[in-house]
Length: 525
Image 1 (cartoon, rainbow, N blue to C red):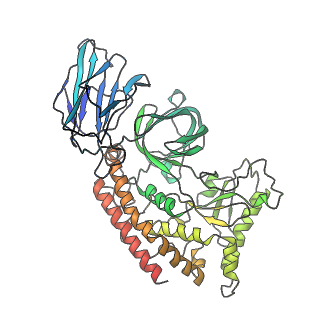
Image 2: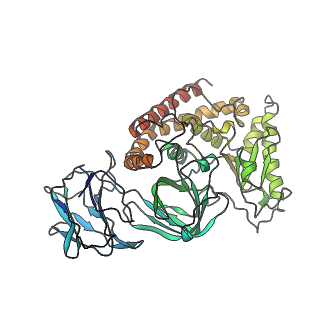
């Protein structure tokens, strides 16, 4: 018999016959484990207790998870007069019966309460466990789980070729089935695809809501391999969610691919035209590109040095020679470089650069700029990159813009914040001379607009420190499992060898320093 003193995440595949327990306000006073000698070779039983880190108080409950094979049955004893406990329904997943959790009413009163869980095989007790809950305990939800099975367990070896008809099941933080459908899956990313822990792109068979996020077919599983905190992308996106028109929503999950646990992933929205994402007009095969109005939008563009390698439709901007990939509409719609849509958006970007570069002393010049770009979006996009210390626009990489029908050009959405971000030791602006910002900051009107906007959103930035605390608390145990599975062997952010708590503290210190540094920079404009 082995005792593991740990906080673990529930596996839906069988685990060895172990007792897993934790102490945060619980006692394990009564437990025994007996394996019948004549039992089947695959007899397995696992008990999992999960607790939150300090400060996670929403939806308080105790999750007691059981995983067992068909040969076992379970019983609950001591439930008489236990109004504080609710037993969830049995489910069948991958050939195993499992009882996801027992929920506990955090508002129940009275002294110490307990419930005994017993698993029986061939009329013999295999495992017995007593849960004791004390009033005032703070407990959390489990990490959501994503299970993907490809046909014949095919490996995902390409970021160009989709594997079709994979099965995906998503379980929410309560252990309830959130999604069960088919999906196509492939690799994704540029440099990140070359890392040991692979990121993936998903294309569901139909638009589906996933873990509370709005319906869509397209989703991304970010690996965050180089990020000791796992939080860099999420925190940057949260800044965008609070200050910009749209930024990707995401949920941290445990990924199981063809029965193998792959660690912690960030399941998030892919940048796509949609009323719940980039809310602009959609151009498709039925659009009339000869129409002077329809041809004006919508478009999603990415300024990125990888664009010529990754996209069929790309061009170099006329003045600055920036590589620009047309992400939407895709090549099924814009079928050639002579297509009216291709010619229109290339010319529009060229016009923006022409106006920005021309004589800035002309009084009408700023009005012309304002007619072409949404100035506030460019300020918001710049602020997030500066405060997070993201220098990717300097290449440029992962620098998105979009344009609606008959509308201006907007900066955004945000993407790719895991490289070199939230690190200490840098003062002042780092991208104020990159992309078009070198032109924009020459205009007094732009500087004044930056000062005004920073005055409006500075407090929002300062409030995100609490968000980091909550997310870090929820991720702590999963992060430790993940870093043991995927040690970071490349030094990028400087926190690779730190403990999780040290990395989070460093991240917050760097974030707060950048807020102060950018505040000083803006006040001196």
